[in-house]
Length: 383
Image 1 (cartoon, rainbow, N blue to C red):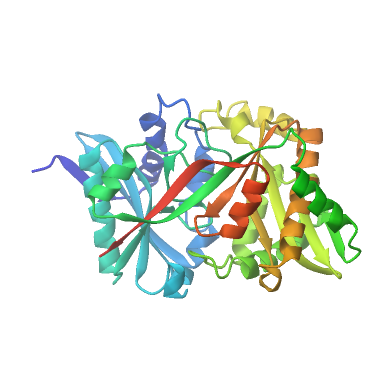
Image 2: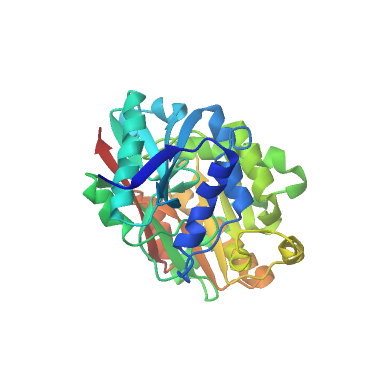
């Protein structure tokens, strides 16, 4: 008989324990970046995260001898349930995430608990980890534990993969990030492609206007939902989620780091880049108080970073698989990387995540002399 007790999170104290657990488990891991606890709390709280407008979740804690030793979420996304099954989601597919465990025994019981909740909801397949959605922190880190993650990317115990597989799961999709040196000249082929695009009078690349960010975000959302709609795991982003994310990330939105490409006056592509705020908050211990908020505000006035992250990039469907699409992509990359080095002092970029079957985006990373530096794996199991 096990001495592990699994209980649903039901109180504010439980939620705080859920948020706090990784700070103990990763206390000795130099490559783990403590997230801001307030951000994690907002992510798991209905009313603060608009994901709950189309999803429901139950959080669980594992306790042994009065100590919290694990956590997991079990959740449903109704927009994901409505997607075509051939794209990875679809009817009967539930999820789990926020997985952390002190040992293999705890992991086994936590995953079984999440599966039980999903079965009670009539789900027939489990897909995870997703915390909470494909747009937040998807997948388990299975390669690249030897260096810290960039902003909004996860970092996990290397033992977790074996524990998840021991519960009957198999990998269904890998997500790649690419390390790209940006303090060196562009490869000659890319230079020629960019120069050709600059001679094309149909093409206009413009910076976003942060002062009118709501309107700019609506343009980006329209392109994104069209460009990614056939991708594995796609779930449409709602207006409320865009507004929420825009507000949350506005401090690291800079006009120079987001480009919208127009062809014949129509917005058809975008590229978004963020300075790696993890470099600044790594030493904050998960809190902005008492003085870290002032340090962060001062840094945000003119951030200097080593790394930039490109989390999102898209070209509308009607142009995908055309020469124009790759030309627009390389032009946006060239312009943003120039500003990244000149104005922000960056020397490297991280591009991704990129699906393991997304050949065009992998080609962009490889053409920029990029190398895969992290792999995140999403697992599946029939329930």
